[in-house]
Length: 258
Image (cartoon, rainbow, N blue to C red; front, side, top):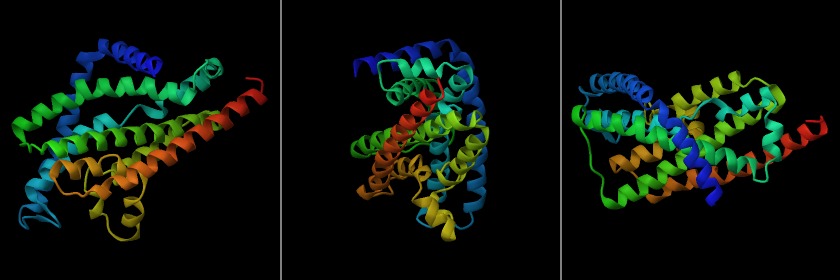
């Protein structure tokens, strides 16, 4: 465990040189969040809200979702496709550590950096302008768990996108598919429960719905403990999927003389 902690710590420190750039990116992300806040304010003001959410709840939802979006959206394919293209993937597979765990540790360091230098500045800005809601101590504890599960599921999904480069060499199409579903089904723009029909039901049980939806519900206090069932299920299922794809991909590389 100490080895993976050191890997995460090293990647966090590497990214510290981009702190100023990250603050500029945070400002741009905050502007997009303001647009969504004003859209929901205009749409829900006359009715006083939609469903179980008041207008204020919806404004806080999209603001908080925009903050978390910067935490659960890692870089495309976790950079695995770049290692495949350069051939470095063969050397990384030779390391005496699990490749999946290595990538998870590396990217966790990057995402913690995003949390500190993108999410927290946006949180402070929104607290001063949009408003804020202070959850109870119990809700804060559950919120941290939901955020960690959402982040892990996001990393697993991006890992799957990246590892497919062993078969496709280019993952742009799969990343665009991932990003498109993320914007619709994660809760970053609307609560997932608002999506109508069969598509809404399917997306509600998808792993993308576990990225932001549970955290936003806990933040607003609209939840029960069953909200963790799907995130835990997908965390386990995606872990086994990633490990299996890694094993198959490594075998493919060895057979082809990588």
